Image (tube, rainbow over all chains, first blue to last red; front, side):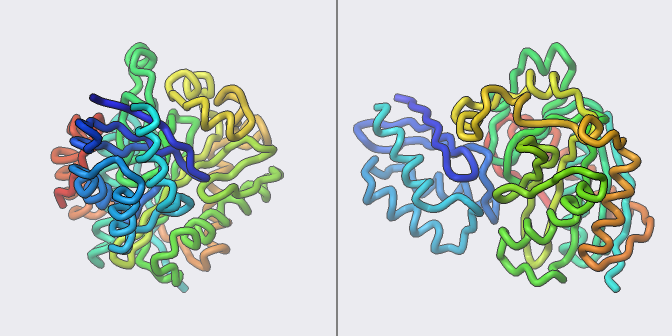
Length: 92
Length: 257
């Protein structure tokens, strides 16, 4: 089942499109008008989210580990990414 | 004094090549092969997407097709913009001689000041917004994007001088949630042109920006040319990245160089 959501952070929209089965993320695409440095890192975040259950703790761990690599997202906080990803749960 | 190469190189009908050239210059500056650069350029009729955006989500494809608007993706983040010859783009590409480090907020504040002062000098009450835009009376006249890689900075901006705002508004799909947040109903209430505000044209704006940035950044500008290496790299990036559907219409990250 594919679900899309739009989340508004202070500066930037985070759009999530995800496929999941039995509460587990199969595919996920994170798009929007935010900034991320380095840009290519977005692929790592998407890859690390695959196979994860759609639960706040599990998602927060992936996002926190991702930021600990030194990723910078000006005016968008890691909480925004966590909320953006979790926002698809409500649409299930 | 820090001398910048002033590059007046544009490919109005080839926006994909234009953005490929932007990245080629950035990579050559990063590798130490090219000098710090200040560039002006325009595109005749194109939407430029941020690198995390999907064309289908941002662009009204029917409007784009009917008006022969080309769709291009740049290698920096941020939002989609519409460019015609009334929109002036400039970029500042340099090794980090401004003590920015990885402080992206500082990069924006350092680089946007030159534009704000230029606009004020032309009689407009310009203010820089949260991070990457400049507004006059709440209406946007400049949008910027920036990146940092290996102690190399790129800041580029689109300046609305005399752009067809009706085309801009009809081709860009701006979600209601974003407009609502800014307290406006439509994108037309959110943008305006410098020509309308001040009567100044692109020639005036170019001169004001060059003068202002020279002072703001403490640099001199000397007219220069694109290097053979930059040209070759731009062609390579065009073939392997900018002309490819996977880059422009997908969300694939392509790093051929």
